[in-house]
Image 1: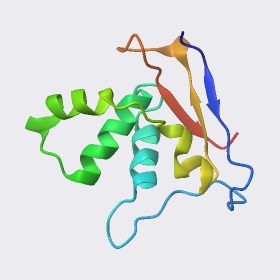
Image 2 (image 1 turned 90 degrees about the vertical axis):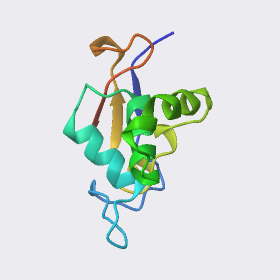
Image 3 (image 1 turned 90 degrees about the horizontal axis):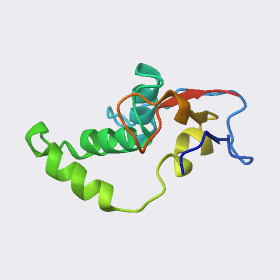
Image 4 (image 1 turned 120 degrees about the vertical axis):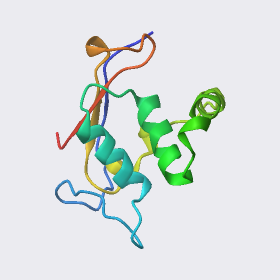
Length: 115
């Protein structure tokens, strides 16, 4: 069943205000990639899209390999944004709106914000 979900800022989050995740060592971190994807396309990308695109960037997977890699990736049953540093470290809440679906029937587009 699909329903609206809000991933709250963790109670023990050290951020007083929402922070944009910084790069580390000249490379974007997982949280920075997630943030840029969500902010860049609010209510367009699904949780699975965010997680997969983050994986692609972090592992430097060539676009030609995306279809097979995405199929393997989606077979894994893992929490995705529920364990993101965006809510745990950087003070961002993530709203997943199932009523505003675009192209995906089983996944919801995302929006990020300090709620």
